[in-house]
Image 1 (spheres, rainbow, N blue to C red):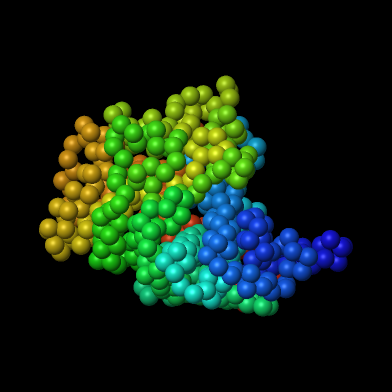
Image 2 (cartoon, one colour):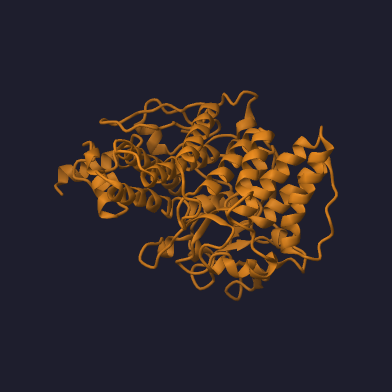
Length: 479
């Protein structure tokens, strides 16, 4: 590559939203972005997707992009736990994510910048693959692949709007700034403005419904399937406060073909691939994973091991709750945290990332029904049943939960914290319910931040702001 070409790559590497991802990479099964092209501003030949096989390879490129260490393989899974009350960085550390641990993120934060571009790379890849796939004669196999692509595009938009925008109910009509919605490829560099949160959610719902209309394979390990899409759609409606729709789509997911794990094999499932309740998980092959930059390496004491669970979280679990054994009590490097709480959900460099699980559908439905139960007692009973299903799966000796109204909703949120610890849910669960955040660091260092707070969302990256004249920064972040 010439010096001029390298300068061109650098110029575009953090500028305009990257829709120009090349299909040739898909056809080779690689995971590189358009930044590796000699001419990153040149439109690739969409016609290289010519049949089911090439569309399948293109879709593989989309899934590979989800596994970036800047996305599900570390940053996006960690930040919502670290800014909340589940995780902190040990005093024995290598400097990773300290700004988040200190609640002191800046607009130049590399992890935030990486997440922004990783998510939009997924969207760009999906857009190109969708365009190519929709030019093919339809078959059931092609429809399934297109459904997966729409679902993954929706997931990336959902993750972006949660990380970089205030929750849906921040304003009465969700008219506050969200993120740019990108659904088409362009032959020139774009400078898209931010859409409203309402508009982003509308597109997410549209894409997920489109996915459901196309999908025809109920189980496909490592890929999006209808039960996963139904759960994601239920979650989207939950965030929107549409309890009826959240209940409906969660029920669709629960009807099958996935089933909850039993008490005896729940813990071991975290060291196994594709359990009976794993609706969608990302496969980290030995030759295709984030390695030392992955989530597992940050938690595992045989790796960096510097991301630790808080005592506050550990003490939530009863001694008979099987999930408690996914946190191991020890001492961090002899002279640091004692006791230290080691996370055991992700071990080593090749642990799969479980993105959507059936237990989420149960707790989404429980929360939606608890809200509906404020005017319909029968829904409260059903909400209690859903909640007890998850509680007793983890702890067979647990007493029946008979709470009602807001007390029941609070108990569901506690259960969500216990069930989905370290999976990237916690901060979003707090902010969508307009709750304070107890930010916990090593030792007894706890600071409570009230809702709303500008720092509960991430800043638009500095380089994106400089490159895109139409971009608007989040309030409270100094440019």
